[in-house]
Structures are given as C-alpha cells and as structure tokens.
Length: 418
Image 1 (cartoon, one colour):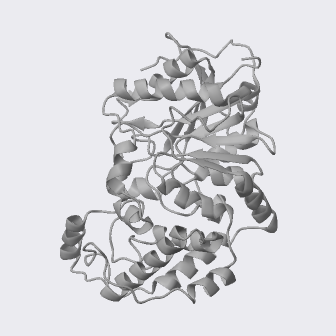
Image 2 (image 1 turned 90 degrees about the vertical axis):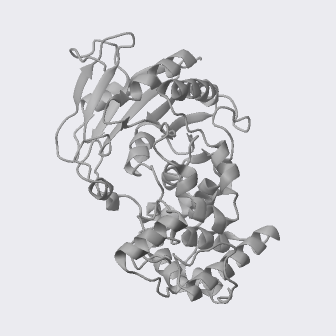
Image 3 (image 1 turned 30 degrees about the vertical axis):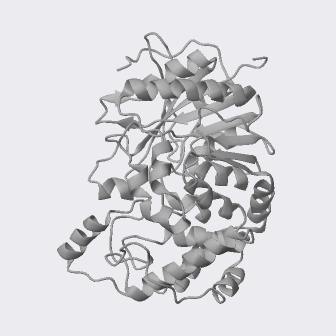
C-alpha cells in the first residue's frame, strides 16, 4: 500500500488548482495528500459529485454490470474539455461516457470488444418521441413461435412469443439494412427489459437487471419463491420505459445528442489496437477497464446477446479477463501505449479503477507504472467518496467498503508538444 506523507510541493496545474479550491455538494473541500515511493503522486479525496443517480439525465437509466455513474464522466468533461472536443471510452460498456459527452455537445468515440455496447449506446444518441415508438410498435407482430432455447423459467408462454416476434422483426430489419432509429431504440429498450426484479421487466422475478442468471439458477429461484412466470405485455412495458428515458430531455439535449450521434464513431476492437482512431485526436478519455476476473461479462449477458442475435461464446472469448494482477497490468501497459498514441497533446485520460478483493489490491497502484511508461504524466488520483447505493445494500456491502461506494480515478495528461 502506498504510504501518505505531507502536501505536494510539485508545480501547479489546471487539475491541481481546481481541486484544491473545490467545494463538494456538502460544502466540504477536498483533502490533498501526497504519496511517497517509486511514483509519488497526489491524492485528492472528497465528494466531487453527488451519489444520487437521479441528478443525472434520465437517458442513462439502463442497467449494465460494473458501470459508473454519469456524474463521473461529466465531472471530467466539464473540467477538461470544450464543446466540439473528442471524448473517448475504450471500454464503452453501457455507453455512460459517450451519452454524457453527447449531452455536453462533445464529439463521441466509443469502443468495446462486446458489440452489445453499441446496441445499448447508439440508439440513445437519437431518441425518438413516444408517439414514434407507439406507432412503430403498433405494426410489429405479437404472435411469434417459442424461442429456440428453453426460456420457460423466465417468461409466460405468451410473453415469450411476443419477445420472439419482436426479435425476429428487428433481426430481419437489420438484415435487410432498413432498421432505422426507432427500430434501434425499441431493440435497445427491449434488451434492457428482458429480465429484472420488478413488474417493469418482461420476466418473472429474478436478479437485478444488470445480469441474467442461467436457466437452472432461475429454476431454483422460482422453486424457492414458489413463483410461476405471469404474462407481461412487452409493448406496454417498452412504451413505459421509453417515456421514462426521454422524460427529462430538453430540446437542447436532443439537438446535442443528434449532432454528436451524426459524427459518432463506434468500434469493436481490442482496446490495445484501435487503428480507426487518428493519432493525437482525442482530448479526453474517461473509462473503466475490465477488473481482473470479478465480473463475468459473458454469463451476465447471455440472454441479451441471444435477443440481439449475437454469439455470446465468441464475444466472451474476445473480452479480456485477466486472473492475476500481473496479467492485468501487462494488458494495461499495451492499452496505455495505444491511449498515448490517440491522445492529443495537452489531452487527458481519466482511468477509473476502484478497489477489489477487500482492499488488498488497489489497482491504481498498478495503473501508474503502465501510464507513466507510455509517456503520460500523472496529475493525481481522485478519490470520490459516496454514500450508500442500492447495489451496495443488495450485496450487503457497507459504506466505503470493498470500493463499491468509492470511485478511484487515476488522471493522466499528455504534455503539449508530445
């Protein structure tokens, strides 16, 4: 563990000057400390953004495992970029950075080895009206066949037929090259309503919607709860979620999103090699990489991949799941070399890593060497401390334990003239 010492005497920077004068939502200033060791670095600890999800745009309210709150990228976008700058996320996930960049009138580049990321992100750059969605749903058939796999433990037979009919319609539209923004939106919303733990989802009660359990696990849940899947009207639920997602959008938001979407670039690459991104073009990267082996992306998303016509096994084999810290650091070394290439002189990387394994491993200590070796300067480690979250309570994790309620972001800069 890094040992903390006195306040930094390093020369000032935009990042340092802003944080030393910062007052959080509670009015408290940030605590600034410097670490000793082979890589001395400042730590800035405080509540830099509110933990309340509802303070962000309603457009973000889709579920995905291991995602950060929208306030995190917004903090860095506001501080370190201007309108028109390129904002990038090499591990796009549900698209939090991309959507927030679009709302802020920045240019968007997103990458993820899992093509599901684009399915979840791109439609939200072109939100349709509820009237457009209702009109499209009215012409989509409801009577489909049973699924090509056993989903009876999740869905009532009539619900399953509606899901299969919608899936077939969307796959045919995509295959024929005629899927439009409304089709993509409906597909995105349906993908996020497949399973969950309330009546707002297509399925019977199951785990929170950011992960899908196996068929056998769902059968055990059903037996334990004495439940049988009941009919859910998926068209009605899609409309309900649509209205919720677009409820807070202003005309300015829609204009910014559409403008960002028109020029947005989506890649499905290994983050270590992104030849489609020009050298020295990205002003800010905000991302959170895969964490060792603690999140099972393939197992969590098998049902979503099925609905979207994606091969979950092939996708799972492309996602980096390092099992040791050494392996993880080796991968990040290559990621940072590529990030240094694409970052503009004077640009920044905000790399959120959290804490894992009951605080026995602090990944920020393993991010610093690869980042510095790539040529970046470390501006500091920002530690945002938050109050309880719903997820923390679900998993029985106390406040500020195991990193669940604490964001740890290593901030790098690329020198001008590099």
